[in-house]
Length: 206
Image (cartoon, rainbow, N blue to C red; front, side):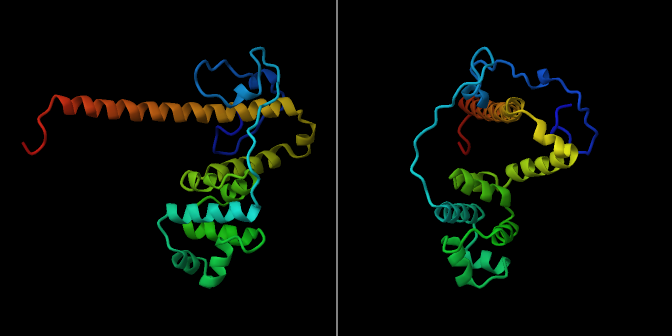
């Protein structure tokens, strides 16, 4: 079983072949690996968009506000849950302080969100990541996986080559993309079915 697909601890054989990381062609489906592999599996450069750099504090400020509003909480409510003076919290949310991991974790506990996603949001310059992961704790799950992988493999991590790591990461994200596509297809199927049913039934109340 590929690492990360089991929640319970397990022993991993170190004789895995690189073939396990080979990714299949995905056709029209979205694929993270499309930007890295050619049709023959060779690595090629990824074309990146030019974006205007933002200050870390500005990204953090936006991320905190997005999460707080996603939860429908006021600044006073979050400050109270963090056991912090409102003015201190307002300065923190406004990005008036240097990156404070303790505050970020206290904020995440108060808003039931993903602290690792807030940190990654700053790292990748995308404040929306923070609220998008608030419920599913995506980045915290990745961090737990990294912690367990580090404990499992230890110093042998240094001997891993970049290519199988990249392919493994792409395979994981491609699986999540495929699941997202399936969920959206199921939602569309249900919505279309409800519309079809409504067309053959009298309008309610008449």
